[in-house]
Amino acid sequence: MKYSLEVIMSDAEGGLERLLGRLRQRGFGMCTMSAGRSPDHGTIRARITIEGTRPIEPLIQQLKKLFYVRHVAISSMEATISHVYNQVDAQDQLGLCASL
Image 1 (spheres, rainbow, N blue to C red):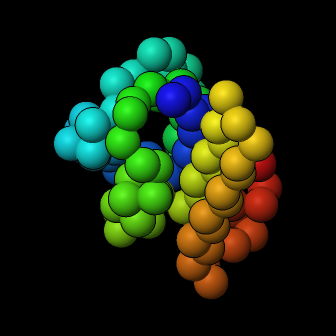
Image 2 (cartoon, rainbow, N blue to C red; image 1 turned 45 degrees about the vertical axis):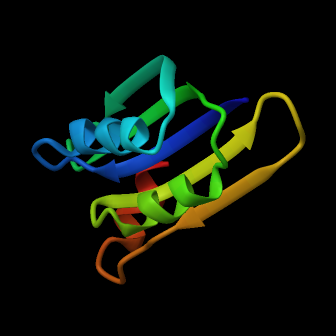
């Protein structure tokens, strides 16, 4: 099954690599990816299309545990499921809203 991920994360060293590693560990292969930094270099927005036969729920739980992930939106490209996870620190709330 194919899924589309939209991830907003802190611009931490190695953060994107850890995110991609977590996708691999959970049995999902990457089909496409585009990523870019915010103008202030504080956040990264990534859009990733993944494919796998495993359930998506364990992946969602693992992505929630990554400390630098602020927002994850997952939608299925073959069915109508959608999941959104937001983690907003009190200090970063205004900066995150401005970067969207």
